[in-house]
Each structure stands twice: as C-alpha cells, then as structure tokens.
Image (tube, helix red, strand yellow):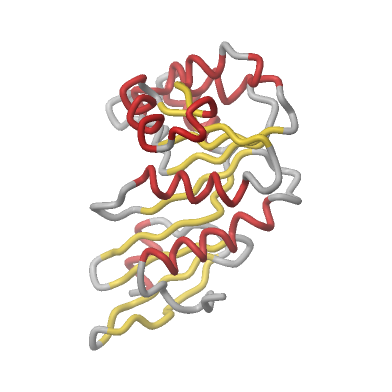
Length: 208
C-alpha cells in the first residue's frame, strides 16, 4: 500500500490509492461517493473500468454516461459488460434503478447533464460512485432556485478520492484519511498541511 503521506508516482499507484479509498466505503452507511482526478490527458473510461472491477467482486455493478455516443464507445471497448452500460436517462427508466443491492458508477456528469443526472441519482436505490462530477454551473445566477438546488445536491455526496496538481503543489484525499496539501521543493513534494475537510482556495494559498 502506498503511503498516505506521499503523492503517487504514476497513474497505477494512483489507482491503487483509489482502491484503498473505495474498500472502506463498502461498509459505509452513506450511499453517494465522488472520485476525482483533476489533471489533463486521462482516459477516464480506463479509470471507470478499474472502479467497476473493484466493485464487481461484491455487487451487480452498472456504468452510466450522459449521452448515447459515450455509451456506444464504452460498449465497443468493453463488449463483455455492454449490457451493464447505459445513459443516465435509460438507467433511470430501467428496473435496475430500484436494485438496492447494486452499485452504479456515473461517468463525468457535467452541469448541463443535471436535468437527467439528478433524477436518476434521486431515484436510484443502490450505492452510487460518481467519477469527476461537476454539478454546479457558474453561469447560473447567484441566489437562483436552481443554484440552491444544485448546492443542496452537492452536499449529499462524500468525496473518497481526490488528486489535483496545483502551482508547485498538490492536493490529495484518500478516504478515510484527512485531506493532504503538498508543496514542491527542489522537484520533490513534501507534506505541508492536513485538513479534516477539503480546503478552499484561500486556505491552500495561506498554507503554501
């Protein structure tokens, strides 16, 4: 197991850290979890399939995407589980939505997917993992009913894995541990600060 006090050296180690974060959630009373890899050039379907394989040892697992094009590509690349892959809308209309003993992985929902993603999430009876979700929309006016609805929805999710490079720094979270802020010095990263909850931009700035 990689140390929780150092950054992963590559994607494979990062995926192992992600698995270490997922395992405790199998006994968690919460039902909604987020996993976030915030850097460029990642093949998210590979990460989604890795999550699928971790969870498939325990439950019926489904993968959902916003649009049919993404579903078609995933079904082409992973034909052995093509019947487990669908859109948010199709899954919401299927019998699987009521399967309390199942698990779903939703892939990269965006703010413009909210109208199909929120009802699916609210109707779903099983355990839900969302990979790189972006629920809130900066284009929605402050104080609007929709913004409040989205903010309340965000609060129902618990982050279990998070990794993001910053300017000569990095932020990482491996559930159930604290959030860790690292600073780069001489091309090496050193732990600067632990946080019980995700630090905001000001807290990060102050501690670097």
